[in-house]
Image (cartoon, rainbow, N blue to C red):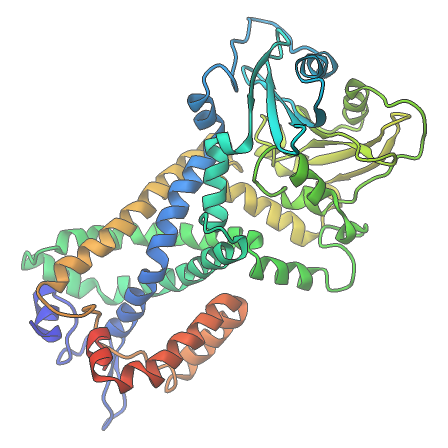
Length: 483
């Protein structure tokens, strides 16, 4: 079966049809529908595996509290007595030190309701382990390393695909995310240019035409969601994220505000003590780290909490214990900890309070009001990305979105298989995108390549392979369907 025959079978635009074509007299007109469809097809080869994995892992991570509680019953959640109050953190800390006297306590994450309090400890072999405490009875309910938590595996898959080398995995995720933007844009274009071919295919009851219509209809709203999620997720990537931070902090200050947050080591400290594989939240990591000026005995964790409460930081807190003689208690009411803090949905409430470990005085504060405009935008985007910005409504829409993305990732290959029939090669749509002859298209692609460096580099590689190899080798030209 020839490519033209396949196009007739599926109702696609074919060379003798005028739909979607423009051109000058004497020149072969451009089949724009087929051209963008071809780029959509090849982009999907890169994007589908990445988006499918990100959807599953992201959905799992979004419900990490529920998933981890289900896989470790009675450890992460407890029975909360009616009208009972949670015990003080110092009494819960004492239970941990009694159970594990040879361990150092690195941090603690308080919570609400039936959630256990989590004390992150360091074992004698240097491995971190989370000790869970029933906040009502102050009894230890479990002791788990980060590798025993499903949520950590989901986060790692979402970040670097478990490829062993974090940088390689991160670059692949960023590559897929960048091409997802191209896939979305081309999808919008072929949605409108392909209305007539899809309608004709449905009228003729062509095999696969119904699935093709469902794919197109689902792709329109989901495409908008993909653009939002990809853009809001780019700040976490290695290349785009680091470049964006350099640009935003180009004056030598901090991305997050006027303070010396650009030199902050708080992010590294959190990641070393948080008991998970997740990176510290953007705003927290970029905030300034205070120092203790006093001397003598260390205050209790309850005194540190009281100081943060007096500063107006919303509870429950995540608290990093002092590191070294000049370290501080870093008490955080933030969107990042997934512990029921109100700033998880309203990021404007986010606040970190550093408390002198000897005197209990406040050694520094850093909150949403101190963020730069860029940092505020990123923080709001992260909350949207993780399905938290508008509470339950945001969560429901994010779940539906992830399921819709999975449908698109499955329906795309099914449509290709139906359209391919008995043809050889990739059976890609046969058309050429006139990059060099269309000034608008060239400018758009250069701009997108500059905005997304990983995409730009991959685009150069793709165009070079196409021009220097594929089009010069007959077998490759036939396999890839080049024209």
